[in-house]
Length: 542
Image (tube, rainbow, N blue to C red):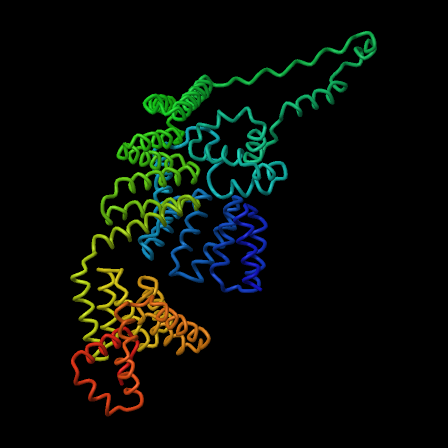
């Protein structure tokens, strides 16, 4: 039951229904209160809807239940970041990295929070309202007050608050937003009057403020028009910023159009101008990196991608944008790869991109890079001579019944020459002796795939299927081997030996008259042919 509720929670979380996901995880926790994964998942759901206090409680429970699980400290760090407790977040991420030094999510989280803490120390808020937006109690107040609770469901409002947390001086940019005025009133515990409240109050107070003697002239006088509210002054700096951002977007659009027309140099110039006008949009860098990619300037592409990632982390840009930059960098590294080791940084970069945002295109590129590396490794290691030496060593260990050692040498032989069916057949025999029947069956099938005329592959496969009690399949394999022999699809030399009347009589004597068979073995030609049949798996000597 707990697994079912957990699965529903995971599905809701993936669909972006975080409140529903938290509800399902709570149900699962009631059924399995000691499962640390459930608390971790609910912490993530709470953090996604900015309920950082609850997220912190669940993260602390996760670490309590599983103190050696690195992901718990990642949840703990994220909750502390949401609450503005940067030092506690840094401590949590560092504890996680002590347990799992290579965890990319922890590394990324630590880098982000250190950057945020550094900015907070460098630029203390000069705004008189700056401090009220810091700390966990701010979110609690906004959630508790009915007038601001609904704002927390609005992404643009949440971004506005986070921007003020990063730089309190930016509050002047949002004073024209009535939601900000309402928020200030809640945080300062004062009643902030909006334009509607002013109009309502003036209407209600007019009869009370009018003198008694003036009321006699009420019908003769026309009501005085209410003064229109004066437009709020917008700082010149804000207007200038908006203007530059708009111009930057125009340059970006011009660059996109030039890119589509294959006018790459022109596109680069437009993206460069956009960056000069607005350095807070990393899409200008990723787009220019795409142009460099098309031009074959992979080093320049990588530099722009690195700048985009670094700047994106400073600005806390969308994870999808950072993932796009990393994916583009990985693609450029693949283009530059000349040997198998060159694929390692590309694979690592794709893995980092997937930790930011799991994108099917990035996953495909990661798998393609892994396959390309493996193929190149095989080409670099290909050496038939060493492969034969390893196969002979494996044969010696097999005769001595040292099957694990034999497997090790056969595996090395296949690494040096993966196209030799004999080695797969030999290793299948070792696996059979060791009782590793599934592995042996896989090798036998690979042997047949490489050389359908190699009859010993069918013998190995049929024997393994028999030991696995798959008698019908074993019979089919034997029939397939016989049919191929009858059609002459096996080795022509073997086929010729089997069709020789003298050899047919020799084989009959082996079954019915062992004494006569011993005489046949004195003939060198007969003995040679018998050895051929034994090697092909047609005849077994006991």
